[in-house]
Image (cartoon, rainbow, N blue to C red; front, side, top):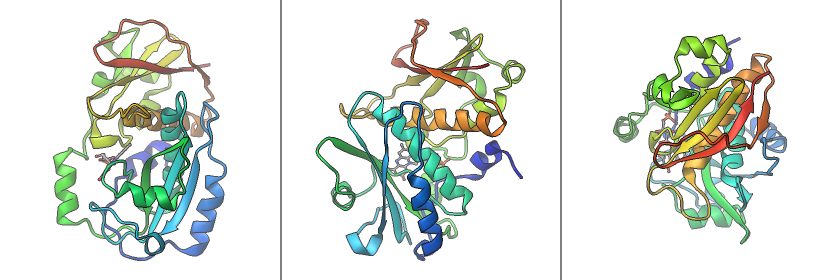
Length: 271
Ligand SMILES: Cc1cc2nc3c(=O)[nH]c(=O)nc-3n(C[C@H](O)[C@H](O)[C@H](O)COP(=O)(O)O)c2cc1C
């Protein structure tokens, strides 16, 4: 059996499907799983499952998608981070079960999906995903991947630091702390427009997560790049969990000097 990092590396955004709806038994299994999602903030995330034809659901970047999953959350502090964590937990399960998925936060007719999900006035639905059987990658999809360099990620030392943002963390140093694979799982996570906004500073037994903001992702109610950081946090924690390592969690800003447009999010505590 492969590691969680293998599973992370075997995932890619899938935008071309073979036109079959998801098998009913598998869909039932995934619906049951969606009731068990968790996140360190204990904020509930509600998923909904829809046949495209019932609600006229589609996306200009997708073809052959017949089943969709929506995810919504009540507006509040850290809701976007928690959202990224829990929806990633779900989408990795779908990937493990052999389904293709892609986070869609922009390229969809939002009103139709929000109507299908019966979004309440205190809720947001930052993203949806198709669920389906992967077909051969299309020309448009291949070009789109090239446009955002979807097959590559920033170097380890550009994302992860030691004691301060001035000193890159080496893979050997991460290995000594037994978090190298977990950080690799962060590095290979998906993010909106592949911007990879997660940054990590390791200080002794503390692993601090930050968001490096780009312009245009925060709409005042939720921040898509905080969703990205939540995705990275899930990958980090799950890589450790599946390796038998448990970590603590706290929100306690260590007050490290920050580069421009960088915000503290949360801290994991190594045992
Ligand atoms: C929060 C979020 C929102 C995204 N929104 C879209 C979107 O609206 N349309 C789209 O085609 N891809 C979207 N993506 C997919 C990213 O473009 C993709 O994850 C990234 O380019 C890396 O490629 P990979 O997932 O194949 O590794 C989104 C990803 C995330 C995490």
